[in-house]
Image (cartoon, rainbow, N blue to C red; front, top):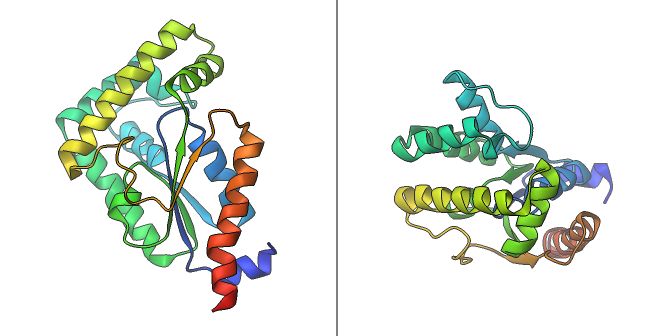
Length: 202
């Protein structure tokens, strides 16, 4: 897909979601670059809010550190952080030409193509263990803690069951046995078929 053609379709909105270590953020950034879309990450905005609260987030593994887990517990007690993130992402979606890497936008944003990236718990633990250079057992404990807390936050705020309710999604891709490159290639083919071919016909 040429850069010129992508620019002509600046009203595109793509929302990508998936549990921690599913590979959603990696593929989201690559897709945003390929299709000339502005990339916005709910996790990045949360880190910016954490900085304003005196935290020092750094690296992709910060959420699984002791400090990251402390901020997660703070979010569970005070919804203002997540509500602020969602407000900012919804504003970005209005202008179009965006890819939103977010747990909530598939439910909250009333436009766009919505993609869920799925991976088995065993594969997610393996990926987290490799990424953070920790044991499989420690990665499993961290992942379970984060999954449970994150699900509770959004169930309380919006009533949906993260990782269980796939109602908003147009695409659910299980990449348990796929490499990062294979996941990217499959999603490119689906996006071009669903978005660009449909628009070309119209």
